[in-house]
Length: 443
View 1: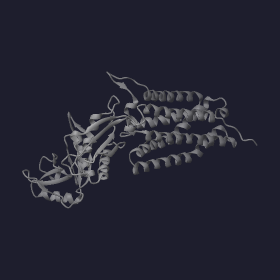
View 2 (view 1 turned 60 degrees about the vertical axis):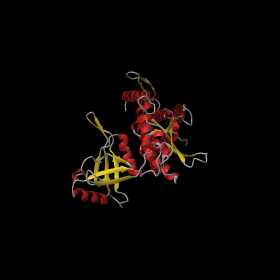
View 3 (view 1 turned 90 degrees about the horizontal axis):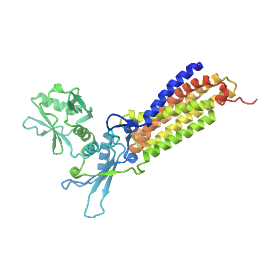
């Protein structure tokens, strides 16, 4: 590539990288009383940015808690299903001997609103959904008396339930939930529908869910699935959670739920400290690469900056990611993988030149020899991240997410960006051997 073309391409790429860096770290006013901030779009776990704690007690009329572990497991499952994977559920036993039962404490952080603060109203609504009580049962019959319990003896009458997300029709919003019945339950339902007008009633505990307001027709089903339309998003989520997780064995006093704001256990400045740590580690790595490999170190450093930009922007682009201390550790480990790939490639280039190849041939062969080790290293990291994400919960999952994103970014940068920057920088050097810090072996 000619020197002129290299300057043009480097200028374009540098402007793009500078723009992304500015958009990542700068703040500026947008509209009236609003501020643009890239970090507003990054969800934070309660251990990283603080959150809200909720404490609830049993209703006086509720059954006592016999297996607290079962209750905590159900609540945690529901929190995870709503996206609060970085949350905490604890049982609190009073020191007062007169108090024989537990209180439950839930700690979580709501999604950020447009000002970068957690939306406590939505979080509170979701916590109420998580604490919803009652077993789900189906009843059928005539419009005047749909009181006969159906699906008796069928262990799992519903094989799948799925919330389709909020949708709009003009100015109206609706929240469709698709319920797929098991074959046995579907056959029983269709038999009842074919016998005449048939109304279905769904109960959670003593509360009726107003889902079926008219007689069911066989044409309403797509396969064994039927769509229902709850009136609110909270209601839709509650239906899904009740069916998937089963009912709680006890009823909590949600109306008198206590709410507390909690700070991060690591202090309010932990997001800034984490950014400083990651930034300092990146700058130190760039310095080492530039000293060790000179011109190739510059190319690898530019690639590392791209790696970090990909990692950061993916935290915003992929929904549901909550940054925690474990997430930061995942980013650091992924950065080490990217740096290791750059060092490996630089050494391979130096080795090829020392054996007598030309600069151009050394670069080409060096990248080829580094290809398999870089791919295998990133692939192993990616598989480990997938396994951790599938087999663990909460903090370990947060680590797995950023590690997995980083493994993909490290592969892209090591195999594509580093080579691209090396090819663009070489034409600008008068002495290419010195520029790349290449030396021949002594005979």
